[in-house]
Image 1 (tube, rainbow, N blue to C red):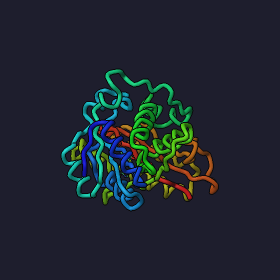
Image 2 (image 1 turned 45 degrees about the vertical axis):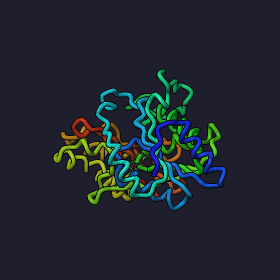
Image 3 (image 1 turned 90 degrees about the vertical axis):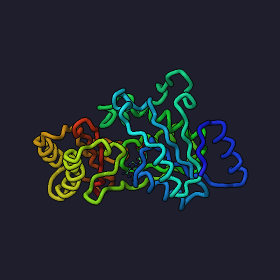
Image 4 (image 1 turned 180 degrees about the vertical axis):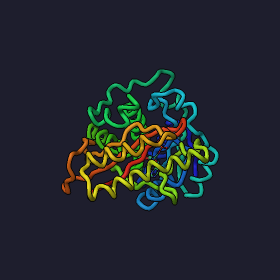
Length: 283
Ligand code: AMP
């Protein structure tokens, strides 16, 4: 496994590989790697000749400077984990290497309602920053396939739009959310949870499973109201949103309809840690 920090070096390695007809799988991450990230790397290993994993905590997607400051950074153990997975290349640039000394202009990335609902409502500008870094990394790495987790479902929707809008020659592969055995979605942010908070955090996944159950007997609006009512009675958790949306346009839905996929999406603070999760409800 080779660790590369500069754009010029990674580009020249990839260009040599491409001349040999090698296919490139790409896994963009912000580090603090866990089984969720590694599942993406494993999938990429089975479908591509070589795998590039990037590790870059992208400032332009953080609307809260404190959140950026406390985001976990564990480069050494990340490299050990990637080595074990036999990832061929790790690209870990500095902020200076990616954006220079100027704050990047992310205003060109406009996804309309897709970026203003759910996460977008609570993290204004977040998806512009995500689109900026993913577009930049795609241009540097030029992958054949790029792997993203359904854990960040709205992000996946935005990435599809990005690829369509800029006609990027890359296939986007969805990977299922990896959960702890009790249902908690794996997240780099889980490290920041105390033992007590870790228990409270289970309310996110359990409310999604419960919504799935309730969807057999109640309308989407009733399911949503019921779950919100239940979560608002939990004082250790501060709910931001619980929405039931169609998987493509992320519009709230009023009735169950077999002709499109439906997701329930949730975000909440447990203590100072902001967590998100989502689950497919139907079909
Ligand atoms: P992050 O480092 O949080 O930016 O995540 C990098 C990639 O890993 C994104 O595509 C995430 O959706 C994906 N990911 C994060 N957590 C999980 C998980 N529990 N299961 C599957 N994929 C995940």
